[in-house]
Image (spheres, rainbow, N blue to C red):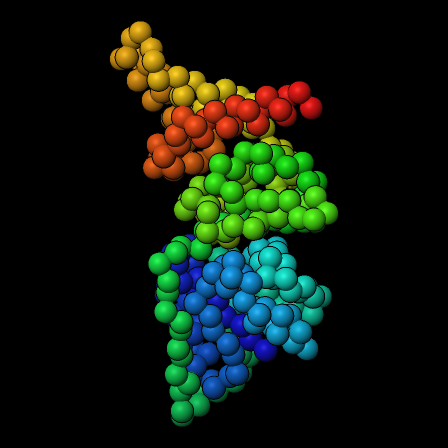
Length: 270
């Protein structure tokens, strides 16, 4: 079975690569299934994942194997990576992928028509947890302001509210000391699901970030101009350090900052 992900909500995979592969697949009359976006379906826990995982032989044309393994896990389906072939459109050319898929198959006269689901309004940007790496330190849970994470019945951090995540914000992944959080549509390794370079350790200090956010909540200052300047510097540092988009930073309310401060103080007491 061949499964193709169109990654329909992002241009992280060049459109020409996706289109070329789909076009050639249709030419051969191969039996394959195409979906608009695997991330979107995983967030909805679509039952198709269990069917795909149970296939005797599965080839997935999408992105990084680590990402796909844990997207299946998020959808409550266990993917057997030993019997799955992964063809990564983020690292391979269309020609390389087509050679692996098709070999010497010749085109057919009746070209298959490809139909994609309509895209929804929500951009499926959210974290995926790599439980091979996760130590359940709960830094992601403690940091996130938007209720994306919760604890399971056995006290394991899990993603329960993907739609609550802020588009293009990778802050929790940048903070994770174990590189266990993946954002499939993120541009850079290893947050994008690429293999982790163990020689590069996370050096971000969450407590320092909490302090900077706390400073932003102090709205009454004697010198308003100086305060604005300091806030601008803090925002720039946060943006650079965590990769948080400006619009997300600006959306943080004083109450959000206060909540972060409380969580930070609790963490320090523990």
